[in-house]
Length: 76
Image 1 (cartoon, helix red, strand yellow):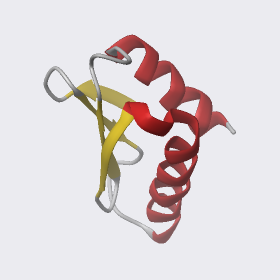
Image 2: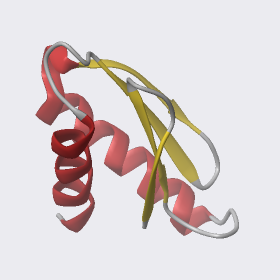
Image 3: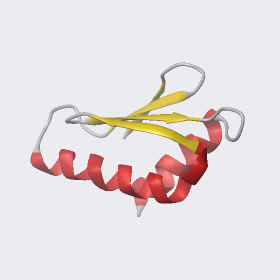
Image 4: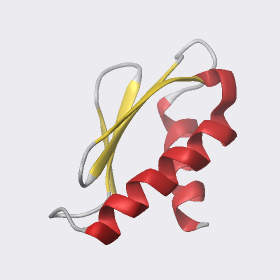
């Protein structure tokens, strides 16, 4: 998994190089876990075939903390 900043209030998590059923399932699983873990700090999730854009409230959480949550949710 690769994380990349997407502005001051978003991070893109790249879960694969190409789309596949397995990667798509990982995107959906990660999104569901982040909804639970982030709660009101999450603004929106935008899934694609091999990545997930995580938009967050920068007044409640920062890039570092979001990155750590993404890594933790992906590991579980």
